[in-house]
Length: 66
Image 1 (cartoon, one colour):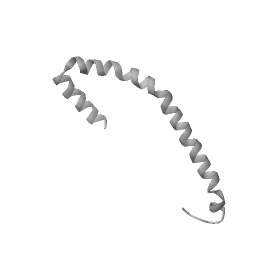
Image 2 (tube, rainbow, N blue to C red):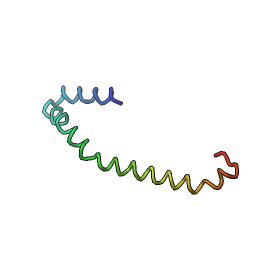
Image 3 (cartoon, helix red, strand yellow):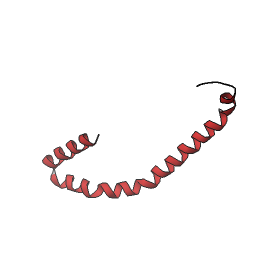
Image 4 (cartoon, one colour):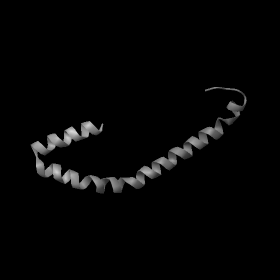
């Protein structure tokens, strides 16, 4: 995935270098802006996994291997 991103950036740099430089400058800013949403997503994923474990606990105690 990283190699594909680098290849796309190189092609963009050849085709339109101001847009490629703008993308390089904006990439860290966009990453920092999306970081809280990633953390919220990770929190909800962990919460749902905990609820799943709690709901499936009786089946696991009775011997179900799923």
